[in-house]
Length: 247
Image 1: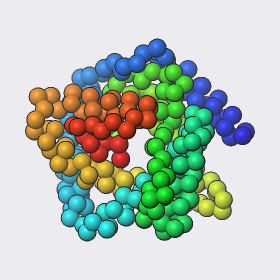
Image 2: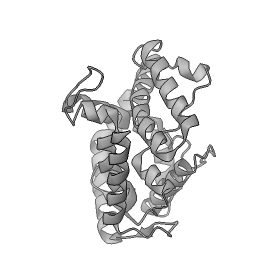
Image 3: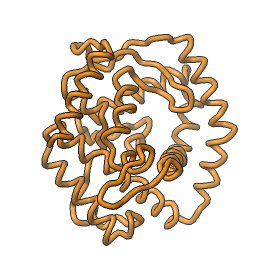
Image 4: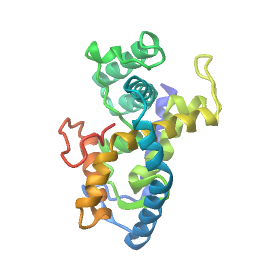
């Protein structure tokens, strides 16, 4: 419980430093000119590197892609555990703990997903969502190099994630948890694989969105903010424009 107290103090400090209007429900555009330039740079990187890798990934056999997706998703579930505690959502805490335990053991390190068949469907939670449940508004919307769309709250949340995520704790934080430890390569390899998996799943959606959008930048911004709002509200509503954005 001492860890939870420290994390709550950290979250309170982050919210203060962010200077975010807690009454704001919508993100305001900040540094639009810079964000558009960074967005253009990110798309160039995507076209040159990530898109070709994603297309090659999509040619892999279905069991390989499914197993990879399951594996990265199972590790991502670890971040939901402390955030469920901080949000006081103990029903979802049970789903997260149960899903990770079943998939890591019976599912062979998460390559298979028997937990889903048992009715365990954990929501993906992060510190940005937790801050939102405390009433912290999104603040400014902008685009980061490589990482893409974000808000002031979510950027600070990404930093805080590395302190509360057990996987980050035993890898980039170089700590040991339950006799388990890893290194930076483990962390970034899993994150990169997850990014490729996400990009591959949304390959056709991205192509369609870019082709049919009058302003691709604005379309991506709208979808990102809608997706974050759905996640904060634990909404199961499907998004027609980008159905796999919740992966």
